[in-house]
Length: 513
Ligand code: NAD
Image (cartoon, rainbow, N blue to C red; front, side):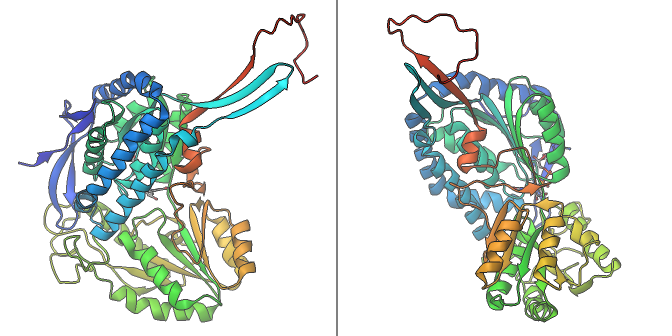
């Protein structure tokens, strides 16, 4: 019988009480490996109630004591790195190395959160007026909620809850229903590390659960990461319900290649960032902008054989460079975009449609019904388009698959305009040897995270992650100092102690006389 994945509420696994379920696939075989409960409003209520009742005591726990739990938690996560990577790969499809890397990036946020006593230090001014001192500190918000996407089932939740709980909040996580198991195992390790029951809860579900969480009167703040239409919807609904909200959306990340770029370095960077994790990364490079035809021709010549030779396979195969897509439906959507690109007149240099695992195993195409009914994994090969134009949908839309579009620009200014005119503003990179151009790009690009000769400029845990334009709705980025600000609110105290001095009532606004 297919296993059922548990929620995690009040410090322990909790079986479903509703009757709606979703399928969790093994994308490399297409088989259904488990079913995930899709929480009803009452299951959501139970998770929020657990978080609410844990809040007062956890908020009153001294920050160094909270940090001690986090220190133990990060050690346990490291001890269980391989296990967690395997869970991620088996439900997402990415290679084990990639999964290990992503879990490690999540652990780095836990390390950052271990510094919470230092991070929560406030500000103090002595003598702002006669006998008056002023100081500010930050306090937790209450029950915070995280809603996360399928592509990083361990890392993205760890962008959120370690910082939230370090700040003294309690948390309800609603991970993606496509790969929900990592979240439960991570919550279990947190409790093993000494986190009190109810501080971190996991409830599985779809739109029904998300809507119930956003509308819940006991929820103070909502962090969301996912596609732009849902991010915008969640942002509006949560703001209307009076919650603090940050909602990170989709991306179309450009990598600008200047004529003086180191082409060997650029090709390696493009291969890893466009085709790693089968392009299912919000920081994947999906557009290369070549400045000048000479650079464009050289890039196509070098990239094409590399894309054709990509080693595609299951996470069980250590040599694989790229795994399958997460579901059959997503595989079909990505292949549909390749069809559209051809219809729109782009030049398809490498066609990944129907390409299966490199060892000739049970791949996409033959026999698969696209719904993952066990007839084959959700594989697709890498595709490369040349002469893509900005009006084409393969340029405007986030495809979220292993499809790289090359756009030819005549000048640096034209390349920069492309970057700035695109509706998304998550990441962008420039490859050049020229300091002036690089500096101009970092100054003028309307983008949240920029790489100079670095293709995937994901900020370290102690900096903050977030995009501009329609890649982020809200005011705060995730983790780093912005994460601490998001999960706390400021309180400012103005105090005077009786000194024997008696003042007359003052009916005008106090000033620094
Ligand atoms: P998604 O928007 O489909 O789902 C994200 C979350 O929202 C999931 O938990 C899902 O259950 C929930 N959800 C889905 N439909 C909903 C609805 N109608 N109402 C309320 N909730 C709903 O995204 P995905 O396919 O899981 O993930 C891929 C997307 O996430 C891509 O667009 C990618 O760029 C984006 N992403 C962005 C970042 C970033 O930092 N900006 C990071 C990772 C992924």
